[in-house]
Image (tube, rainbow, N blue to C red; front, side, top):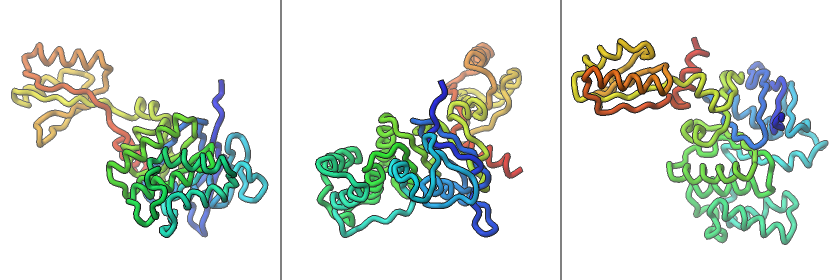
Length: 316
C-alpha cells in the first residue's frame, strides 16, 4: 500500500536576484509524519517553509499538498485553510487577552458558534493555557507566548502544520512542554514539518529528517534509516586497571575501528562496527584476558554527530 504524500515538491526553486535560496528541491513527506528540517543558517529552510505556506512564490517548480496542487492565488482557498504556519518571528498582540487573541483568529477562519468557543477551550487545554485565558498577552512568559502562537496556528484544525524554529530561545522546561504538545498533535494524525537547531528535540519527535545545505536538500530519509546508514556504534569502556592493557587487548578485535580517551573520566570511547552479538563477544574476551572492566556501555552516535559528519562531507 502506497502511503499518501502530505507534501510533494517537484523542482522547487526560489531565486532572489542572483542568490539561489532553494535549489531544485524534491521533497516528499508522507501523511502523518513528523518531518524535521535541519541545516545551518542560510541553508534555505525558512524560504522552503514559506513557499509551502504560500507566503512566498516559487521561482519555478510545483507544490502538491495531499495530492492537490498549491497555488498562491485564490484558486484553492479551501486547501490553504488546511495549512497551519508558525513563522519564527510572528508578532503577538500584547494588549489583547489570550481568549480575545484566539477568538480573533478563529473568526478570520470563519469558525462559528457554538463550535468556535468549543474549539477555543480545546486548544487552550491542549497548550495548557486555560487558566490564563483572561490574562493580557503582555503578562505571559516566553514559553507561554510560544504555546499561544501554536494554539493560534492550529485553531482551524489544519491537516499540515509548518513550524519554523518554534523552540528558539526557550528554556529546557518550555521546550519540553512544547515537545509534549507536538507529540499529542502527531498522535492525532496531523502531518508536521518542523525546522529547528535543537537536534536533540528533533531526534525525539521526528519520524524523518531532511538536511539542507546551500539551498539543496542533500539528505532526506527516515530517522531509522539515517541511524542505520550513518550512525556508528560506540562503546564506552571503563577499567580499574591500566588503560594501555585495555588498549592492547582492543587491537585484537577486528570490529574495533579506533578509540579516544575521555580525559575527565579516563574511559575509552570505542568506535565499533560489529553487531550486538560481536560486542558481547568483545566484553567476554576482555574479561577472559583479565582486564578489570568497570563499565561497558553501548551507544550510537546522535543526530547532531550525523549532521556534523554530513556537513563536513559536503564541505570537503
